Image 1 (tube, one colour):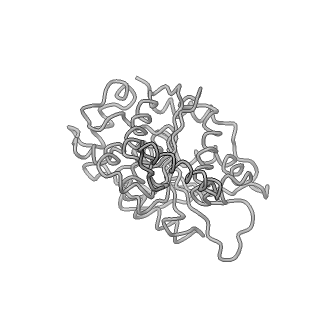
Image 2 (cartoon, rainbow, N blue to C red):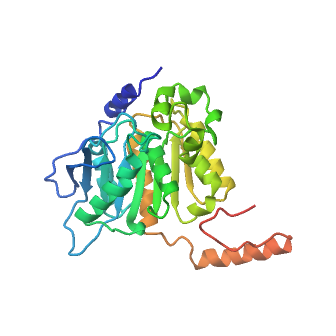
Image 3 (tube, rainbow, N blue to C red):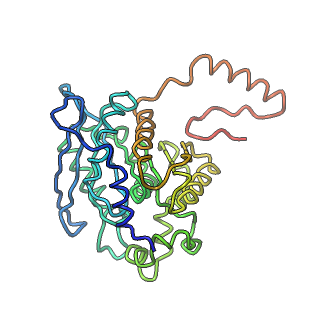
Length: 332
């Protein structure tokens, strides 16, 4: 059985290229660490915080991204990707923003069934209010985003799908989602890397199947897709993923597609679960979030005129000319 701590170590070594440089460089963001105590988890939680380069204008408020690390990682993983964030800002893929990464171990960012650890509650009730109170961030939904990779991608999707009133968008890189709507559908291609011990620690022993379903992104999306209509959703996975996460992410994509929930989905050719592909893939995800913060003017006069011509041809062919709704995938 593959040990997740070995995967985490491999990911750290493979992604060592984007190491944070000297904080004195004015073109680079600043990193700091805080510790936050909570009644929801046993010990103080270390949280890395990235602040964008440059001086802040008086009264300026930045978007806030909660970026969640993978299984076996820690808050220190933000250091690996600080220069990727710098680059995305410098290239204007995304507006200057503040990024926070809490150390969450192997928690799946969930409240356990027995209530022993409540990581979802910690993030929503402790971490997010603390960051809004102590940092110059936009406290509204429109300026609050969540993302992550692997376990963090799963956690980001769960948080955003359960609480779309809190987050404007979610960006999930190689999220560790299962290709299933029910617990009993999970097969060996999942359980070889996520053991029954982990499932039982979080979802109960025996596993509470209803609790699992209530926290499974695909089941949540299938149950009431209308709740996700105003949520920006970005999914991606490498086609060489050693954990077979291509199956889970494709499954979730199909659930969203069939429900006509607008989203962006990428199957990244040649990319693995760990390694140097993660840095440019994070840059692409930041680009998606940047388009949610500052939507591009892609629907201009020419587009509207061409649509009108196509609608006329559709009606002539006996097809409906469906009103445009950018929150929904165009129907066939």
